[in-house]
Each structure stands twice: as C-alpha cells, then as structure tokens.
Length: 249
Image 1 (cartoon, rainbow, N blue to C red):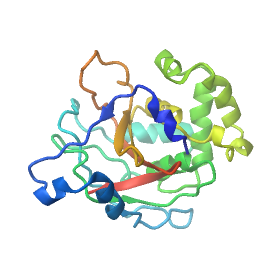
Image 2: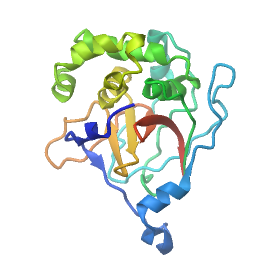
Image 3: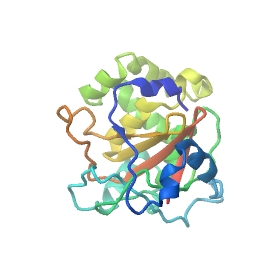
Image 4: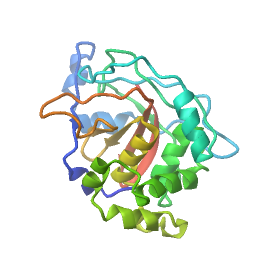
C-alpha cells in the first residue's frame, strides 16, 4: 500500500499512446470510463493451496521504450529467489518482444491480495512465486538491503536518508498494518534494483504508468527511458491498495 501523493516525486512517466489499430470510437472514449468498464479482477485469488499458475501474459508497451537486449532467461530470477529463500514460478513475469505498445489496453486482469498492510509485498510474491504467502520474506529482504546501506546512492537520494530507519522498522511484521509502513514506491524501486528487473506501477487515480529500474535518473535530460534486460513486474495501485497485474489486453 502507499499514499498516492508519493507519486508526486519527479519520476519519468510513461504517457499513454494511441496507435492506428485503435478504433476511432475507442480513441474518443474518456480514459476514466475505459478504465472503470474494463477493470476485470477475474483471476482467482492466490493462496498456498491455489497458486496462480495457469496464467499466460499478454502486454503492450510504448514504442519509445527501448529494449536493447535479448530477452533474459529465467536463470536470473531463479538465483534471486534462491537468495530470498522463496520458490520461483516462471510464467507470471514477462519480457516484451520489440515494438509492443503500452496503454493501448482495454482490459486489465488482476488477482486479489489481502489488504493487510502488506499488499504490495503480496503482489510481488504472487508475480514471483504464484502465491501470496512469501510476502514476509520479500518485505524482509527489501528492507534489510535498504537498512544496511547496501543500495546504490541514487536510491537514498530518491527516498531520503530517513528511509534507513523506516526500513528497519518495516522489517518488524507487527508494524505492517500502520499506513506509514505500507509498501510504497521506495519498496518498488528497491525491488527493481535488488532483482535487476522492471517494475511498472499503474496509478489508477492519475491514470499513468511509472517505470522503476536501475536506469531511473540515469538518463540525460529528455533522454528516453530504457528497459533493463530483466523481467517485467506490473502492479495496480487503486485506492491505496496494490494488486498484481496478470495481463493487459
């Protein structure tokens, strides 16, 4: 979870793009109406007994986003999962082929996760393992890296040095329910750096995408944001609640 005003930081935004394949009627439709009508949390909830494992992803990406590397193998994330002591379920992460488009989607599919203060960690757990139950391990590894000072300096420049004490407190599960310790963009950015992946967040209130990865703040002024050679993790932020996005179509 996160307060929406956290997105007021100066972070490169991915503007919606309309392409020729979109019908004129769809182009004229108001984005808010399109979003509210097309939202389909249709996938079954994940749990230890019912993992999300029969889902195949279909995504669209902006043409201006460069993907300059060959699509990565699953080995990178498998090694990360070994370090985090969580299982790995290949299928819920996605590496886009060239020239796909973002924001031409009409339907987004999510799967529900508990709104207990750990929803963002639960969402990452679903996308990484197919289950919610490893959210505590993911919470701990993210905040341990932050608290230990092991993150790149640009992360602390982004989050502020107070994030170190906050991360130490966030490692305590008893603090999870307090809004101050909810999952936020600092966690998303840290996770992208720890696993060297791309984390996309769709802010429903602002109707905009934000991309977090190690290229954040690395570009020169007006230089295009780039994707790193890592997998894609997509989160929906709506009413201070995160859910894992399983597909955009």
